[in-house]
Image (cartoon, rainbow, N blue to C red; front, top):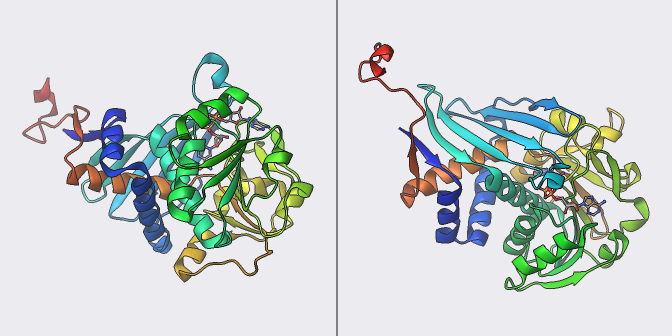
Length: 335
Ligand code: NAD
């Protein structure tokens, strides 16, 4: 039987560990794996595009374990009462090729994206960053916010979403979490006085969520929603204002906000930063930008973390996915 951590077991694990501890520990696993970057066989994800969205497969291996995630991105799904992003993942033992874990990863993607964002900001944002502007209050928003609270101590939020109901949902979910929250009428208003700007919107087009005149000195930008060809959030002028950091350059040039920039536009892969172990910020007034698209290594780290924690707390189910005859040559005997 294959170990299975579905939605219910994921909820149990989070309740047992506590979501902020979960996000902090997960960021530690991601950091550890990025520091051994050269161990991994890496490639940009496979993406099957359609007019409404994309379906992607994200594989990676370090020669010991292999993982992949299935994930979609359909920004208009909400019109049918469906989510933009859903996902599941598998972790396998390379020696035998047998899968050892299958996990839901809709929650997992939100958790690992948030942990990665806050980890990048720990190395890039100013140490005294406490106020975050959050543009977009969809599914990823609360996870992003809690990771920034747990890892950086962010306690003040300035929100804007074109859909006021999304902002109200966010306030309901976060009201007991100790944040000072202000609802704003525009992105321009939301970014005022922010130390960190997180853009986490969904729209399959070249959107301009942040324009040059909205970004002040010393700000760290955590740009999450531009993660597909033809789907961006930052005006190109913003990318010229500061240093840009990415997960895996080859994939980010196809999918990230930097798809708008020339091929020789300079970026730094984050594994370089994490490996130094010290802040990469060069000055208090520098603008830093994490152009996040989501990379397979973050999913690998998530599955590795969930595998270990589900073992520790014995929180998993068994999935009848593999035909496993007693005599390995007698598959027909299973029938
Ligand atoms: P969602 O559909 O649940 O939420 C998106 C929100 O953005 C909605 O509330 C929508 O009203 C709002 N929005 C759209 N256009 C806006 C605008 N111009 N100004 C302000 N708000 C606007 O989506 P989600 O699951 O929260 O994902 C958000 C984005 O993050 C998507 O584009 C998704 O593809 C991307 N994503 C990236 C990663 C990564 O690793 N980088 C991981 C997961 C999701």
